[in-house]
Image (cartoon, rainbow, N blue to C red; front, side, top):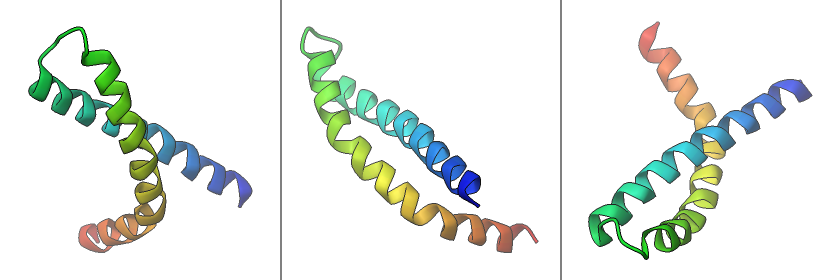
Amino acid sequence: MRLKILAHCIYCLMMSATMTGCVSATVTAVNLGISDAFIREWLYSWSIAFPIGFGVLLALSPFYRRAVDAIVR
C-alpha cells in the first residue's frame, strides 16, 4: 500500500512538473517573446504554477481515474 501511494505521488510530481513547465514556458514566450528576461520570468511563473498544479493533480487524479474507468467500460 505504501509503495502504491509513493508511486502515485511520484507520478503526480512528474506530470505536474512537465505540464506546468510547458504551459508556463509557452505563456511566457507568447507574452514576452524569447528575450533576456524569458528564463527569469518563466521560472517565476513556474514556481507559482507548479505547487498549485501538483496539489490539484494529487487531489483530483483518483477521481479522474475512476471517471475514465467508468467511460471505457
